[in-house]
Image (cartoon, rainbow over all chains, first blue to last red; front, side, top):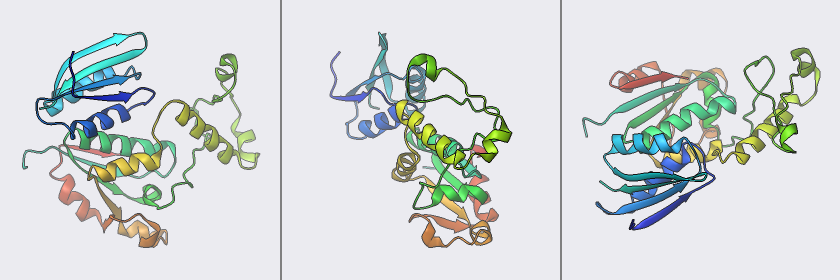
Length: 75
Length: 170
């Protein structure tokens, strides 16, 4: 999947992946896509909840090994 | 924006462990678009000090706290050191040692430090209110605290809390 910016949140724990993602989304224009990689198992539910509450669209959420990848489209 | 959700928190605890909930919830709420205020009162005022290095954690009289070592082989890390209160209370600098171990555990787990979380709250425009009555009660000076703190009393808290969607006492 194509993306405009990438955020490496690996090794970070709650709430840092969400806070960093929010900050990085601020640098994007509406419609642009942010790719986030994390190792926090809690981030799967957290990014879904973040998307639901902020209106940014979670395009995909996948797991491979102990890493989680999210693609989020800015509102 | 009038339909913006609001979160009001009262922070009353002044230990390293209990410093986490208000700052984690406030920073996350701000990221979710909430307007957020924290009212710091009694021991919670410790969380507003310029120097946060005095925040400690005490396992004494805290049966809910697992006592595990943040270093060594896995079998060693898994041991829960069940030290009786009577022993904990007579060991000098026991809280300092427990606090150092806790900070090591925090770093090992990629958990943010309290100064970092507080800065993130500040950046996200979380409003900090210090209870003026307890500032005086404990003989603090405004200069002990970080810049940007407002000082007020219970009525100031209710002005915002009365319109909040979520209100937490921590």
